[in-house]
Length: 220
Image (cartoon, rainbow, N blue to C red; front, side, top):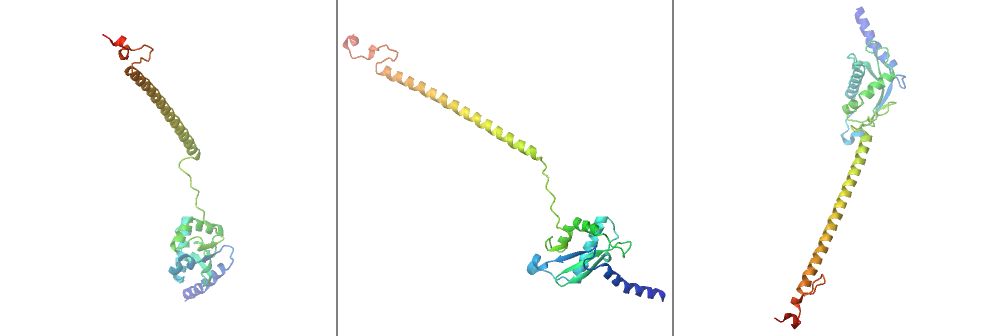
């Protein structure tokens, strides 16, 4: 009989104790605000007690992951001040002593570590599943595999190589043009000599009598 009385007292006292631990603006509590319509539009699902239990389970997972302990359960996540516009407060109790709350800073670290997993569980984002007081996690800066100075050095060396190649090609083209011009000048001079010989004129100043019309030179 005494055991049953203690059991009933525990059942009656537990909700009252939870109510005392979780209150609006609790020092170690956080307010959660969820915008299902904004995130999912016509595909928004109903937020009900099952979803609340799911939230408790995800928070228990986050606490386990942060503390690397397997002792956190949904009973350690206490919810209160629930509204129809999907907002509520929650606190986390210690697995070893359910009357002692986990400090707010530790809860924040757990949420930050598993923020992406929590968002994905509800198909939401940092903007539509808000932990008021815990700012969205910024993406980690991307560190390039190649140091920036090496990239700049490569660009400069590449530009210098391109300039050298362009200079060599330009010099080669000029040389070819010059050789082609000299060849054409020599060909023109040779053509002029051939034409001169054909006309009876030797370009070196010697008169070719074989092509004259004077009878004195053509008479046998």
